[in-house]
Length: 87
Length: 253
Length: 114
Image (tube, rainbow over all chains, first blue to last red; front, side):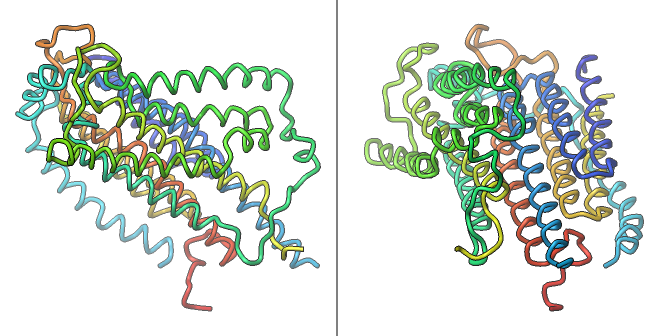
């Protein structure tokens, strides 16, 4: 196993722990983007360029965008619900 | 069940599962010592038989094309599910939310950001088309290129102009592209069935390896799947964005 | 050292499962499911790797050189794209559940109660 693969594996493990232990859902979405980048590095060191190509766009652009939009929609629905209760 | 009960059950069952996994890992070959036969066979026979230099894309669209058919339809069904869940319900209406959207710029996008995304849009679309078409030659193919292509109109959203993005990629066109991709793959299979008697068999001339028009139906399958993946991702993003920016509660006035 | 990819995959599986079990917000559950899915990619790619093997693209290297297994890469490749779409489906479910029940805590979602 080359040194680069070892470093990539350790990075993946550390970032995954960081994703689960982040308390706020908004920050978790951003750390998930970083986790995708470390996974891409890992796929690259495992001699899999095709897989790295698809992982990089999906995980840095596709997924955090959807999570952020879902979070905003939920926050706004809560705000309008509180509004109606106050009235 | 409450969170504490769940954690207690996890603390009980977790070590058992860990022991089972560790015992199972002993049976696996050590990392780097490859024992399979199929992979070695593919490496030997693929270029003489299929004339494609990218083994992964040749496997995806020719040798194991039937699996790609199933996975493509998983994608299709998930996007149909998202579109169904986020449809406009009876007690909602579509109205633009803030003043900013009406004069076509929102989220405080500065001039630098708008200029940067102006450069990004043609780059992403050109790169996406390149990766899709050269699937049989270099790392790439329908799935990878489709996503890069879908990120092109998203750069318009980055500049703060959501309605310009909807004009470049209107919903009807995205849904048509996705349906065309899914149906096109099935029809390519039927063409193989009619011409050679086997569903999804390569029936076009194979050409010379490493030229653009080679490997038979692999570039065409790649383009078709690229259309489907682009349509799928853009439909998903548009559904979520519409929920956030346009759909509101309250009856249709 | 030769089992490290599998150990990291098992660690990802467990930490993702812990995230699912201990989450108070449905969105955190969905994100921890993503971590569990990534452990399968590691196992698949770890099985197919050969020492000294190169990437399975023979455009500019001789066809008889040592290559890593391309079949597992096909499986992981399509899986990555599908994971994103299925996560989008789950998040759409969470948004609609919040519209109906008014909360994203798993303990508050009992449909048969009201």
